[in-house]
Amino acid sequence: MPREDYQQQLADLEDDVLYMSEVVLERFRMGLDALERKDADLAREVIEGDHEINELYLDLEQDCIDLFALQQPVAGDLRFIAASFKIITDLERIGDLATNLGEYALEAERDVFPDVDIQSIGDETLDMVEDAMAAYAAQEPEDCFEIAERDDDIDAHCEAASETVVRDLIETELDEREGIDEDDIETFMTEVSRLLLTIRDLERVGDHAVNIAARTLYMVENDDALIY
Image 1 (cartoon, rainbow, N blue to C red):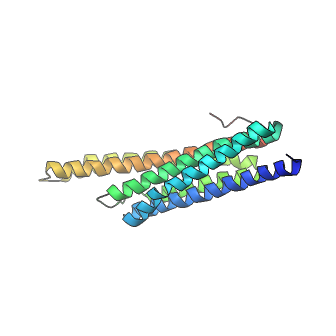
Image 2: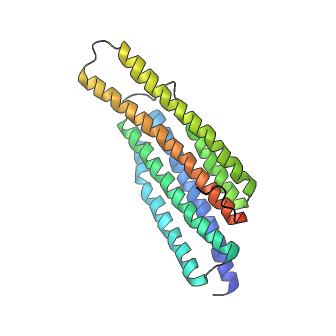
Image 3: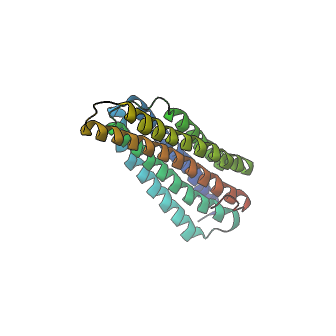
């Protein structure tokens, strides 16, 4: 294959990875909106759209395999392809978490607990992923460290949100209720569990953003400081 064709393949791979990230981020935003509004139609659109993300992943996985097998890349090109391969895996998993949000929205029977700002935490995690992908596109190593540091804030917000749910919903609200029957308790506890799972999934999105930043740093500077 002529050298210019090989370089075009590398450029196309980067463009396609960035496109996949746009699709994934859009679906996750839709999942958050569906959950906030308990919008069943939007939730189903997120769930049904998961196959598109899976297809994008499989196509890009094959592109990476072909480049490994046919071009035998070395040095920077090798790191770029390997990093892209790992990044699409993180993006696919974020897509799965978006599907979870769609499913939670379909099952929800009560409003999101007002003292837990799911949308705000979701916005923070999505910003992290967007910035991680921007660092990938710009090959900017310093941004990778900054993204990793922000994950501590996400973890702290998620931990505080979980503690609020457990403390206020279980210890306080249930204690104050009178005459609640078993069915009401079961429904209530199911909603508590679903909210805790939502918080956990948002935290995982932050973790995937750090993974993307870590692979970008390795790609650019051959530095594995953030890979763990």
